[in-house]
Image (cartoon, rainbow, N blue to C red; front, top):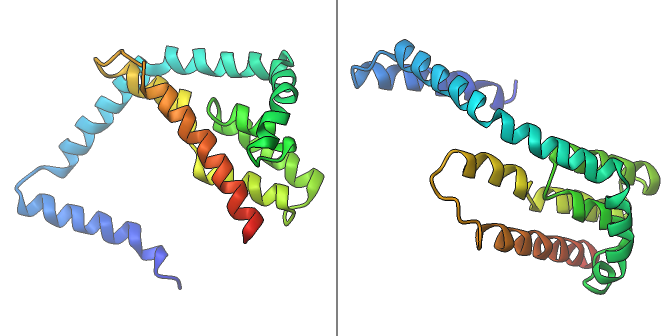
Length: 170
């Protein structure tokens, strides 16, 4: 049996022993955390709905495809295959939509192709910038996104460029 099967139970046992040693009621602390998370879920729900609707409209309207085709030469110049332009555009918005695009790439090009390896590496080296920003900034007092979003998007593009470069040389 692999060691990974025991990790969660060991962590749970450690936390129970640690809470007993610190004289903390683990059950009431758990309930307090669960209650807080429910309140958080209710607070961020409108923001999540807004980002999900925006992503679906962006993709279903065909704007993502049009923008992807327009930016494909720029991405190709940067070393990103033009077939991945939709993935690079959608990835900052939605993890599930970018996963669907990645699956389409696997089906079309095969899982071991250069383009599929690039897509996998892009998926692993980037994050859903707007989704994370929506959740984070909906719960903080910081509302100035002047630098956070542009820097995150720059890092996402840089990650895609480096991903494709590494896939090409490896």
